[in-house]
Image (cartoon, rainbow, N blue to C red; front, top):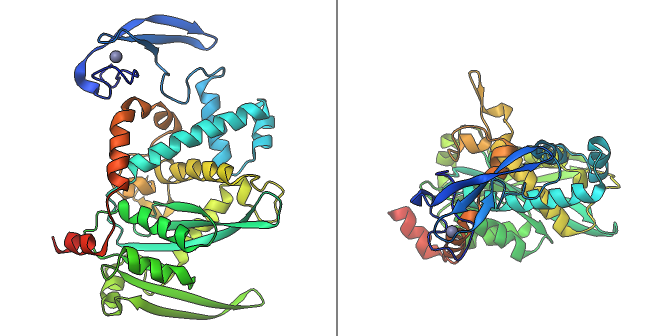
Amino acid sequence: MKSLSCPNKHCPPSGKNDVGTIIRHGCYTTRWGKRRRYQCQSCGKTFCSTSGTPYYRLHHRRATFDEVAALSVEGLNKSAIARAKRIAWNTVHRWLERAAGWCRQFNSRKIKNLSGAELQADEIRMIVGSKQQSIWVFAVIDVWSRLWPSTIIGKRSYRNTLDLFRDLSRRMSLETIPLITTDGFGFYEKVVGRVFGAACVYGQVIKTRRNDRVVRVERRAVIGAQGLKQALQNSEDSVKLNTSFVERLNLTIRQGSAYLGRRTICQARWKERLEDHLELLRCHYNFLRRHLALKFGREIKTPAQQAGLISRALTLREIFSSRLLFVALKNVLFVLFDSTRPVTFATREAALAA
Ligand SMILES: [Zn+2]
């Protein structure tokens, strides 16, 4: 009960979990057993145990909902899930949309204050709609924790590259000077210079291919070359500039998405569908999926655990049961405050100097 708060936006103590105004208010029966109702004593509104979660008014078991989400991030397409679980395609589609919306909020709330000592960014090309249009999925990895903090989908434009790094810098705590590595794509240099400025070490790895084979690898430090040696010494994972970790993440992303397969007939018809799926996949990758590179003795950690965001691996049930919407008001303030924080060279310098 202490974890509950009133879902009524106009109720004064909304969003405060510890006010103790919520009482039990009987039960109701569903096909899958009893569910409890609750009442808020300050406004009198009643609500059930699934209000404000993706399970609200679900006509199936909650476990089925979880399984559909789990199958989707294993790379199954919606039609295959519908056949395997014997549910209508439309239901699968609607559930995945709901799950993705939830994961989007969860990701944006939970991924913050990263130390981000070593970051790598890359982009994957894919197709949407009729096969003529190509679109790019930008991804960033924090190498030390293997966390996938940010992703942007769209054209390979300056705007999108800037959005990616702005989102990333908002999620960082700026205690150390990060080492950033990308490929030779032109906009990275401008964007990293604009967002991080001299407060980072930035290098590029440029691969020359001939007949689909890498024939030459050129590594060059672009920003903060004098700090490169120290940054590589500090890194637990890299000996020289490389983009291997983000390329491995790209592979994981491709494996976890029916939309991103090569030579597929399942390409996303709409960009929004792909965005939704990647939010679900990112949540699963960061918070649920144990990463074999993070094996310490018997324990295998998830990237979010390694990054210190959570203390143990979560389950889909825990994520979908967390009542984010109940603290909607607080969220809005948080998001507004966070997104309007100016990302300027001066604030960055000040943060590093402090
Ligand atoms: Zn209330």
